[in-house]
Length: 364
Ligand SMILES: NC(=O)c1ccc[n+]([C@@H]2O[C@H](COP(=O)([O-])OP(=O)(O)OC[C@H]3O[C@@H](n4cnc5c(N)ncnc54)[C@H](O)[C@@H]3O)[C@@H](O)[C@H]2O)c1
Ligand SMILES: [Zn+2]
Ligand SMILES: [Zn+2]
Image 1 (tube, rainbow, N blue to C red):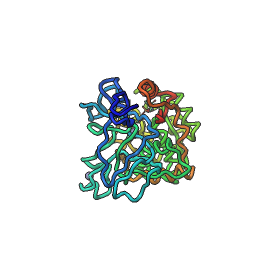
Image 2 (cartoon, rainbow, N blue to C red):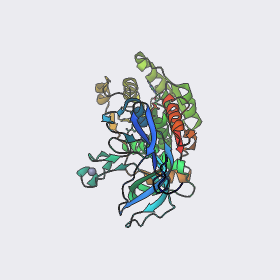
Image 3 (cartoon, helix red, strand yellow):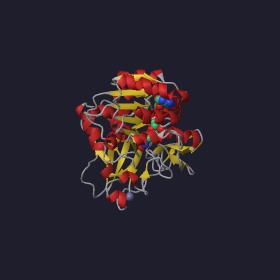
Image 4 (cartoon, helix red, strand yellow):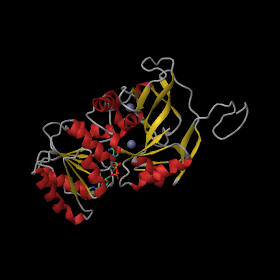
């Protein structure tokens, strides 16, 4: 392509342009040029190699919003990612060109009281990939702070690097609930988040992890990757007592921690009732904003309810678990797509269908 030629994906200088998947409206994703900011002294430019689709990405595509975040301007989508360093800022001395890295997607302010206290995931000024108005990372290249790029051990693939993002949610949930060798764990919901929470609980040493879902495919998947037991429940709200009974029989009444990774009124009610006195219910799923749940009897049994928002300081532990083989996330990657407009569309449809699609991954 000669100098000055104008063609899709090629700049006026003949350099391949940086392309990204832009969310332009409901169900409308287009691959268009994405101009990168100049590289700051503490930043790196990363060539994206693996990007996973998250439930929130699908929400944005279907509704232009997710929880209270509303997409008002075109936005580059994607936040579960790993790639190869292409350029480092003048003050970066921890990474070199060619390093393979997993990217932590949230840039916090480092100045507020939350950041100073270490709870940077609660920073009110967080800039997080693909949370409007911040652009995401389903692009050929992105610019990111070097301290949020974690070098992959040799035996950890770029796809596994991208899986550090969802896995981090499970690890943070386990830390919040103090999961360990003395806690039997119940997980409500066998979607990607329920599954990584199950894997994390096992890696934290939980002797028994039981998982509950309404979907047979999801349950058999959970069994195949290491759930000690699976329990099928119905979506009928009337059946809470029946579900609790089934769980009590399976776990002999000893549920120390329940992770609700679905977030519906029914799952929360079941979680509150099935967890033993003095145990913990960890609310990971955010399916419903408001729900009517039997909180008082749970409080009277000193069941603690613990919230979870994303994660903090989890990438190093993720990489250690992946590198040592304590956690294997590879089976979770059920579908792979390339980076053309048609494939992006198909990939999001596949992810939105759920069922046997757990993690849908782009290879760029
Ligand atoms: N707290 C956080 O920081 C955080 C981070 C990521 C995701 N999430 C939330 O976690 C939740 C799960 O995410 P996901 O990507 O796995 O979603 P998903 O929709 O793929 O999985 C949810 C699973 O719950 C099952 N389910 C539905 N109703 C049920 C019921 N009554 N009983 C048992 N299981 C039931 C579904 O069949 C599905 O398998 C979502 O609400 C998401 O918003 C929270
Ligand atoms: Zn995600
Ligand atoms: Zn802050």
